[in-house]
Amino acid sequence: MPMISLAELQRSIDSGELSADAAITQSLEAIEAHDKTIGAFVCRTENVRAASAGPLRGIAVGIKDIIDTSDLPTEMGSSIYKGWRPRADAPVVMMLKQAGASIVGKTTTTAFASRDPTATLNPRNQNHTPGGSSSGSAAAVAAGMIPLALGTQTGGSVIRPASFCGVAAIKPSFRLLPTVGVKCYSWTLDTVGLFAAGVEDLARGLSAMTNRPELLPGAAMRTPRIGIVTQDFAGLPEAASAEALRIAADAAGGAGASVRTLALPEVVAEAWRAHETVQEFEAHQALAWEYLTQYDAMPPLLRAKLDESRGIPPADYDAARRIANQGRKALAKIFDDIDVLLTFSAPGAAPKGLASTGDIRFNKLWTLMGVPCVNIPATIADGGLPVGVQVIARFGDDAGALKAARFVEEALAR
Image (cartoon, rainbow, N blue to C red; front, side):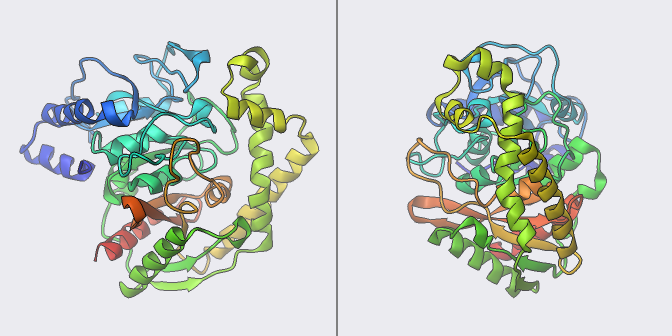
């Protein structure tokens, strides 16, 4: 099941070699062929056609099912919202439609983008999780069903499943993409992101959505200054992730990048520890109606987490936010001497079975910091399971993150 390159589709459509409608049909046929097994989609759009204009005409897109769509249900992975139909599309869906994309369906999500897994399988090895919470979006791209999908990240829900499924993904700078019309878990952390086959595809998709030509893929960054960070405060990685980072660092250095290991300031480690307080304090407010009026219908792992985290004092939340701000300032200074950071995308390869979607410990700091992160597949572990690394740039430098990620991607390909 080869992945579909958005960039290659655009080139074929622009040259007249392929019609936009034929490109959409290609995706619909791939979904028909593979989704009965993978289970990446929760519902599908009827009578999909290509738009007549726009940079993303002919591009089939899947939307994570916590993002509002007017012509499809938004069920959030929960029986509480079975059949619920929003009146309007979320702004981020409209951005896609205005760029000419065709929405072909809603992709599976863990309930309320939290802990309770979906039944979606990892296309690289069906005995393993695709990750979460953006399970269906990562799996649909990895299985070659669609060239572009939307996900969201509050802890590690874009970068980690991208690593597990062997696709490229970007968690952009905080609020580059609007989260209005996206089911909230934590307004300080929730971030909309993209999945695609490669870094060029991400750049083309994000540029078209945001109307920012500076994000369009040009040449890869020339000899970037890369800082390797291992986030020792988050614990040791498994051998597969340690090897992925070594391979990526060696490849980048061999291609001419300046590569050195960096220690993060202690306040950044404190910010990592503060993430959960911010996330769970806000989750109790964001999910108050469901928790208080639909308690028995709440998904069990999320319900248990909310039970466990009840009663976080506002003073603790305020302190966690102050630490987060201090961490952001300290992190910004690091980028005075380097262009990007390179670190683990996940603790290891995708866990076996569907009981867990994996661990967010190597992702949550960067979500709290609001900085752009790009996953690049780096190696293949036992069982044919991909393992990625993430390139991280200064807040607001999404173009730089994509260029540096393309540099590493090309270095790895050589």
